[in-house]
Image (cartoon, rainbow over all chains, first blue to last red):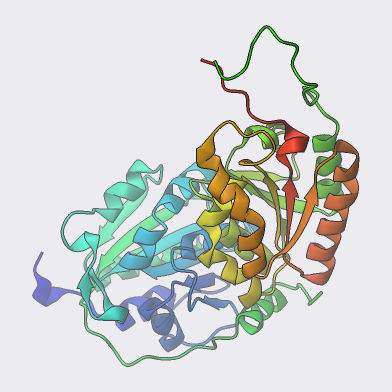
Length: 196
Length: 185
């Protein structure tokens, strides 16, 4: 792959979410959460600041509870690798409304840029496909992202998986709320559920 | 041979006990919709009932921590769930259990115990011995049922405090209740 032409993560995420409509968006801890915040705070954003490896499963729980709403998980390669088994669980459940996007910079950017498995050996698209997610693709250009983004609104044709190779630049953090009860209560409120 | 096979066996738990039905009825009454699980023999009857229930979604997992995260998502999406696992899976959940404090969501798990009460397999004993302690250190309230007749009230209390008070709760279903796994060659 020509590393010089890799995509920049913020423009990838803002392009993915430009026409998000009613979608619920889950961000894996680390830079993915900052990218989602940078694209604009939203009642339906679920920012994760921990629980590494849990982003896809949290997305699956929402997707099963709200089958008529698009649910989009945006996470990094390290977070995805830690919860790699969750792709097998998603493949079994086949939620039509779930889209999983991995921003793959091939490094653990939050901890000093150590190489992740995707830098050398692991093909996440192949893993997703082998786990029973046939709609799995590698994306390399903004044009492909613009073509892909509307499909996330289709709640009957998922699950879908996309791995987007991005450059490994560490951008300025855009900090979302870190208060879990606020974040989850806000989403529940947006869906019409009150506090206990 | 680990015990004489020609000697009369101790009274074994019933083949199809009523307590899994009690649990199923309580889960139905509390409108539990998502049931992630890693299979365990002690949960097999309940899992069968869940798989046959149109109002419930059974979600087999590759590892138990997935279930904690799934239930956090279920809550964000407006549904209740319960995680079924055995004691050895509790250790797999530890970091993900932080979600119960961070989101303060109604977490309920039903854990079949191994590594106690006549256990044959020593490999089950370390995690079985620390199961309650791991939960307590993680901020999860622990209740235990050891006899068939108490399962209903213990699970009822656990579901009540989990779903009504958002108090994360684990019910340990004792190996004494389930019966020690019998290993034969």
